[in-house]
Image 1: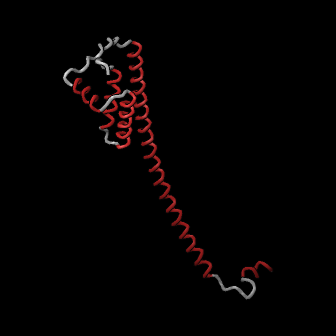
Image 2: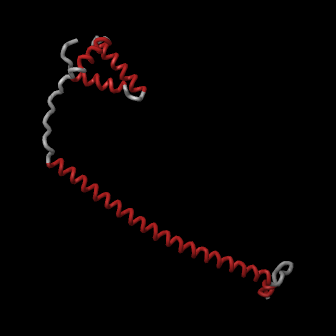
Amino acid sequence: MSDTIDPKELKILSDILALVLEEHAGQSENALAAIRARAQKNQVTGGALKNLFAAIAPNPPKKAAAKPRAPRTTKASAAAAKEIQESHLRISQLTESIRRLDTEIRDLKVDNSALRAELNQTRQARAETQAVLSSVVQSRPPCAVRACWWRRRWAR
């Protein structure tokens, strides 16, 4: 094993070790298998790995200098601002749509109540008409054997 530590290898190793500590058993087992495979491939023993950590702990490798970030371009800022503005517009449109639908629902409930009242009045009138018809049918004279009195009357 060389004296210098490859930062990419260290990153991969740290990612794998982080997975070992995961709560999900499947990920932990896979990470352990990956560590074993990498150690066998690089012919690293457990003791050598322990020495590697001991060497890293007091003197962690220096990170590469971060690349200076360019300030956000105005195109990105303008695009983000436009997206935010469009989102606000869409939210206000949806809010207005909800208000309009609530108003329509209230109006439909009022119409529904009025139609129910009208239906009940119609049912009441029908019941009254049936009662009157029933009393008229019961009050007419009984029919003869084959024909009612009114049929005989019209037959003449």
